[in-house]
Length: 338
Ligand SMILES: [Zn+2]
Ligand SMILES: [Zn+2]
Image (cartoon, rainbow, N blue to C red):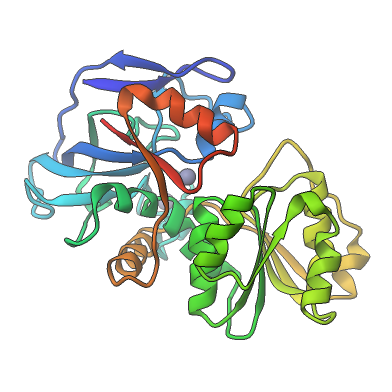
């Protein structure tokens, strides 16, 4: 089968020929039909994220059809259309036992991170990782649920979004499109920030009340103006450069929650007094849980959340998608079709 392989930081991805995998007992073999390119791929390529496993097939947003099931698998069945959950936790640690597989102490696999992922014709995962997709969502539209929407569901949960909150979404990509819509669903007022006018237009179309161009600076001051001095109850940081982190922190309302989802080469520095006098809190959000994937699929299937796809490419055209993402040209996901 064909697969896009990662060979380490600052090395080009390569389309290679690999043996077609077979499902072991309890696993399913999925013929991948759509795989989204996530910003995380750029962090692998730059070396900012280095989990030390290479060569590796990248891709953690995967949709396809079950082609073969291993011994003992009852569901899903051969022919089922599925979206794949990319963590396979140990099932026994304190985090797994409460469903927080994304924090597992002894992951058995993490597809597209330390285990072969979806930029390939086939993927093999435990049967429980293959979540059936309802009809009505195309494969391309479903792919960005896998990380984009599901990570947004996770981060929104950590932020304890509630009606009336002012939510600042800093940086507009696939996760942010999910966050904007989730915030609207919970009755919050959304301020989106990006340097790209077309992304801001899309943010508004999906429910952002305010769209600020980051190039114009003074983001925290403008948030205070819009909110008559209140500030942002929640800030989702998707950019996390020195400049945006300073603005994000300065924009926080009293008891505001700053949630890091994205990261850059830059470190976060804050004087404790900024947090003390506002009782603000800072947290990180990583990945998502299987339950959140199921919920994200429901949200998209019921039309409450839309995914945003910029373009669809053949697997062999992966570099075009990576380049467009790197240059900030994508409004939503580029989807590879193996
Ligand atoms: Zn991702
Ligand atoms: Zn575990």
